[in-house]
Amino acid sequence: MTVLRLPAIYGPGDPLHRLYRYVRRMDDRRPAILLDERVASWRWSRGYVQNVGEAVALTALEARASGRTYNVAERRTFTELDWVRRIAAAHGWGGQVIALPPELLPEQMRLPLATEQDMVVDSGRLRGELGYSERVPLNLALERTIAWERANPPPDVFLDYAGEDEALARARGRS
Image (cartoon, rainbow, N blue to C red; front, side, top):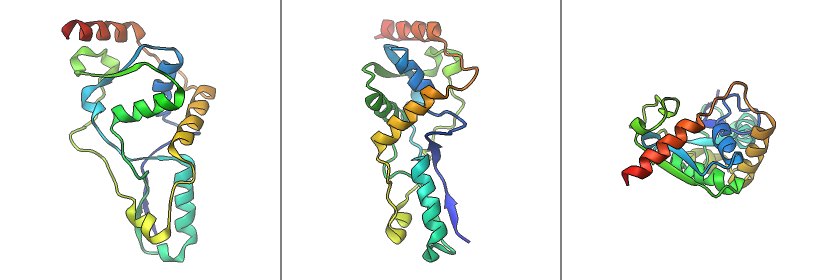
């Protein structure tokens, strides 16, 4: 038996639509995307769905993988702030990504995540022992995900743009 520890998976078919809220704001030409500052600096391992599928197939087909445990994740783990900036670059959006204290954000943007510890895994064993590497590069993975999110918006997503505008105005008034 082989054990695979999977990352947060994004891409076509993602039932959590992990990129949708960012893509929608970019499509709507929002001047800024606001992040809870506790989340902005948090890092967690991710993987594009096709690349993760390739890792699963590789370990299933390789006899050398039997009895081993592997972490599957992209080589580099970005902070949420850097992640949103990479989505913006793939999208072509030129706005700002701004981290704010949670008390300045609309209630729906205050995420109840424990961000004191990053969730980062090292996929070095998978890469070294089995020669795994991502077939789909990050920029292409993001472009494909953006296209899928646009074509498959989740139902019942409420984005409080008025609240975000107020939060941005309060933040700019403090500086």
